[in-house]
Image 1 (tube, helix red, strand yellow):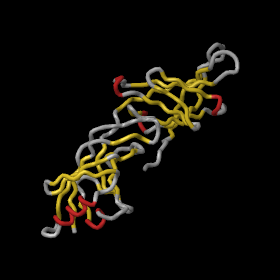
Image 2 (image 1 turned 30 degrees about the horizontal axis):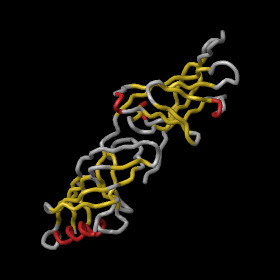
Image 3 (image 1 turned 90 degrees about the vertical axis):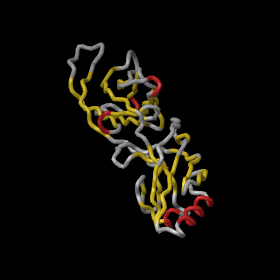
Image 4 (image 1 turned 180 degrees about the vertical axis):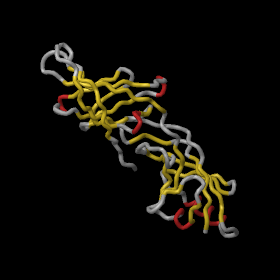
Length: 231
């Protein structure tokens, strides 16, 4: 449902040569993650790591405050919200054939909760957010989907979510829908409401959203979204 985005930023770190007398020297370690050194609780946050002169398969990472793992050549860090962690510290090591691994960099990330998501009406050409006016022809089109998205100004990759159900309220009539499309009942009710007026307000409520396609599970009560449907 969404495309995973990995932002890459450059960080200068000190090369710590443990167990040697070599003086520490500056190297550029690339660690990719959303901007401002932020990661999100209860989410698999991708970290793309590169160290000049060291092959990727020679690198390993650790994090004491959160789960960290590798999948398909991408490292992920996953802090838990219930642990109430404000910061995590990620260590990057060069693996040694013999002896201890050598620390080549350390980076701290702030931990935040996933930004609130709202129900949006998504058509092939437009994303309508709460407060928008939506042409009824687009709303009832078979390709239109109801999708949870962050506020348009939040710079965070949309999680890949599986819609389980949502509720439509129109003229005090409450209609339950499954999957990510309007039910026939909801479409008929909205169309009937527009026979005697130029527009009608509807409320979309997403009481629960399901599992991501990756490892994380995100289940939250979301805020309601209000739209004005016009002829």
